[in-house]
Image (cartoon, rainbow, N blue to C red; front, side, top):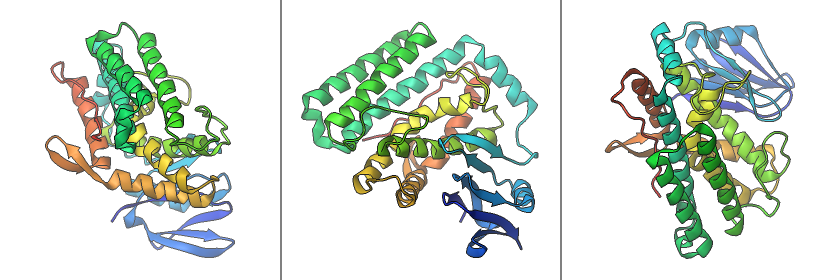
Length: 321
């Protein structure tokens, strides 16, 4: 069974030996994994060595390697030169992002994100619907979703809606005592607080999975629809992450921070396991039950069909509560 491997500890070394990934610490072998069973290699520590033979073997086998910095930002993605991408796919994408139809996709992405934030609140506490603050949040989300469906005029207005609901969402989680007392507001780069650190770590994991799905479809991960392109920013990855953030990362972070009070390696491992379990769980999708990681890939292929056909409409994935 293919597996994702996450490395968080300082001082480890990675080697390839007889078709296996060998993980060593202080010259002592800690773990050996057959490369035939390895799906993705995630490196979340700045103090790790990796041999060129392992990189080469991973490239030949189509195993991506993602390296994150201390701020949990995906800085390096090592993938083989034998990519699936076709020139026609990239041509479609470049034409599509400058067309009016791209804005409709961007609207649906934000619509999906808002609906999933609403559903997470109801899923996390099914009795919370009777609480006035929750009722207010649901009404706010419903109003903004109706605005989006009716047609928002431009991207700044759309992002203003997203930002307003996000602020309301994080405030409500505090009101419901679902977050640690130390969590005062959402912080990204350089966050030290437990909740924010766990969120940044979880989003980095999700980002690498979305990156891989986009790569599989042959799309350009740095050319987005909603997020403007900037040097080093995988805009399309950030676009397609939006509809999965709440149920893949936020929900699992809420669970982890109830058990752990410091963002230690133990907390990281628990969060990784929870996210992996979520991605491997089956959810309703087009009248079937499909693993979430497969749903993510299918959603990327759906976007590709939208780019290729004026009749196809993008439908975000909405989690049920």
